[in-house]
Length: 175
Image (cartoon, rainbow, N blue to C red; front, top):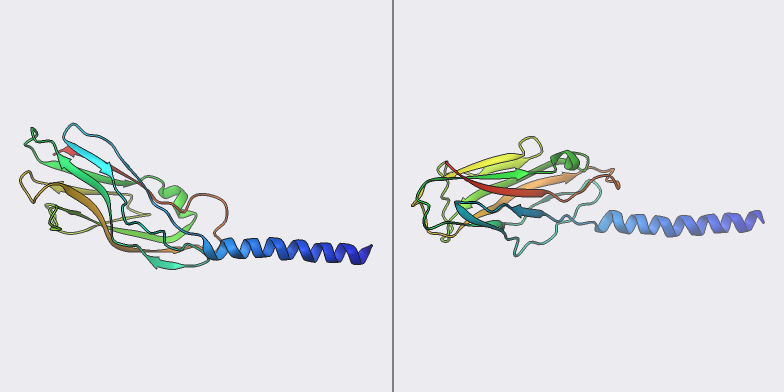
């Protein structure tokens, strides 16, 4: 009887250990994007071309370049705009990531940086809100909030609490 229990215990450990090891080495990160409609511009989530990076163990990786949001100012609006991009679940992500940096830029249809700041903004666990200011008439529409780089490192103890998916929200207001 004792021999049977030992064999059963070893079998259970082998099965659960292999499931854990498989999950530990094959987990991936997705990204969620949400846009709010504005009186000043049409905004929509994009994410075409996104590939899920690996997120297991103490994995360190970089983000692919991808468009997160499309933006087209309304033709009748002639003022300047402010594009707010938020990381809405930073509290959950702190449990999963040692660091998470998303390098964002505001581009026009020709790929030129059209924010008044003329530089990228970093969205991360310590700075969950970035702002792009855009002057009317700058660049060729439509405009894009693009992820152009950054990196992340997952905590080694990645468990079942919280999400590994950054949730990003975009809002366009008048300046």
